[in-house]
Length: 348
Image (cartoon, rainbow, N blue to C red; front, side, top):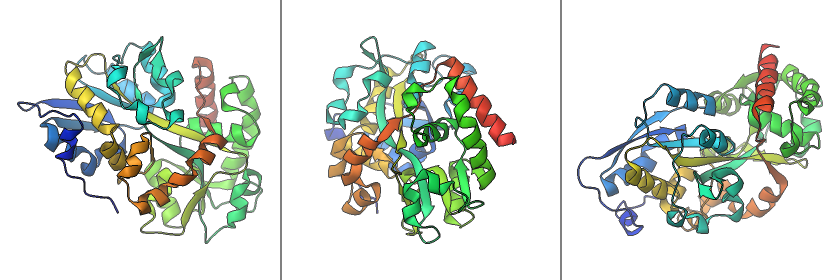
């Protein structure tokens, strides 16, 4: 499915061959560990990228806390958590005039997330939706358009929950008719009863890999919090897997790429950022073997195949963007309350 893109074309995009064996260390999510994404950059620039995977902002920040300044050069981070990293003094300012954001979907530039006081500290690289994924041969697809029908009892024991409190609680807020931007520690109490009811109706709660496996093997028929990031990578193996945005809406995830303030290799790190957010890097990242997602850069559409764009639902994005809400951006009190509620659900 993935086009083979010649590494030499990267040089035309402004990536200069680096003399010597330079290395950068990157804290990344699993989609960046695909050799099809990393090797073309290394071949074109001579820069070796040493990767360490992590899942969840808390885990990434813990790694940084246990490291020395300069140990890490680049970091992938949830868009909603960029501000936390900026407040902690962890991120370097990026030169806005050297970023590809002019080619982005306008909604994905996200200055409210990636900038602070007029300075840019991160750049959106990929996005998608936490919504409803399902096996269309095992459920009534029409039911998947209404969150109330999914949790009505009809599908009890056939549901899995993606184990990440931020998007799932955000999705439940949307399903209740609320706005993610209006969530507070006090208002969160209203989500406790529906969350516990959902847990009681569910068979499992799992991370990315176990969620994919449960849906693909038929252990469950519906995944709350799933979306194209989960089903697209399995499309060639199981065409029965699908996803939708219910009438109530969904939450939109986005991941950002940042250079760490302690890096002593800022130029090489910026080269990596520019590759990942350029058309070819974006196309490879969008179709990573770990999980797929929409590229922030519209010009990736010139590189993706027609089949890849169909799987990503490229032409539906205006509607999906309009009907989705951003992840909650919690203050310390809300974040603690969300994690406490999630832990209570897991232990219930």
